[in-house]
Length: 435
Ligand SMILES: [Zn+2]
Image 1 (cartoon, rainbow, N blue to C red):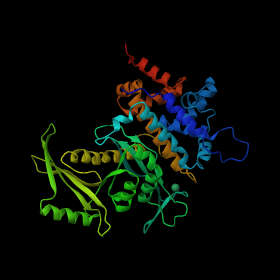
Image 2: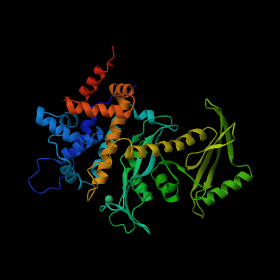
Image 3: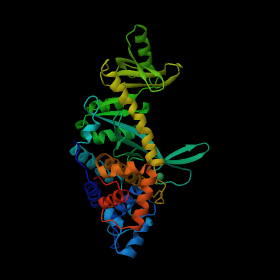
Image 4: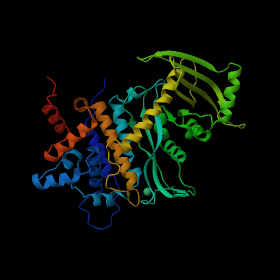
């Protein structure tokens, strides 16, 4: 039975994070704390209301109290330019702890157990998402892409998330930014970011028995060896173009009927599909005498009435493949597609206002904004999983837009002592209170 996890516990994590942010200012002119800037910006993203802080400053003037303070713990509300200046020098590493603290809380209330998969471990999907691109605006952390047509500046983050096949909610984890690294001569890339993220978090990941899911870009020997050395499992998309030796071996083994095959016939409600799994254990990931042996599998889904191929993908894994494990391993590998879309949605069109006027900054602002957006998304996910009132409201209000429109209007006109009072008010007015 899952115990509830309250907004108060989530907010306490955030407030503690704010207190640990470094203050780069030297003068005494510090009416606004770095913590206020962080909590205020978080409030903007959590309520999906770009004007949230301006409205709350208004309310403070009119009523002597405001929702930025009561809902998000902001003591004095800074303006947008002040937030920009205060947050720009903060390295994104300072915002990593709350992601882990939330996971700890989820483990404590029993929610993380629901994410355990076929082998009792957790599935962690890694996904690179470009969240900024411009030919003009740029900062010291931009990746510079030079082409004949001109120079483009971009920001990309590797966004890990815990997933479980068949579960709608993904638990986003602290990201790794693709940005210039101290002492590195070459430009940073997604492969390096994945290695850094795994190396940094290896002990916590191993403790949770994590299996890493990632796309073909990461399906190479050094990464697999890093994962094995850290006692982490993997299920990685494995394409023929980038793994010619492996596929030659599979073709040879197929000729002597050493590639196992199982098929399922599945009714979809409209017609039958045929799901054909092929798999083989211990094939070389690359050419050469020191090639790592991995296990390989593929799934092809064919429409029985038309013969059309509806889906095909293949993976390399360290999981032993048998008639019993092949289906859950493939289901785990496939669950990555979901997160790829989810992350893109969170950062691009789920209403979190990535292009909010905090802008790009000179140092880390763009990355800090992404971390706050991911935290806001994580908090909403946690409330969906752990808060009965929140869940009831979201279901009753239907679309995401309606929910956030209502939050926006209510927090503009009414003062609420806290998040619970806001939810209670909405439930009561909608006559959704039980009993
Ligand atoms: Zn930049």
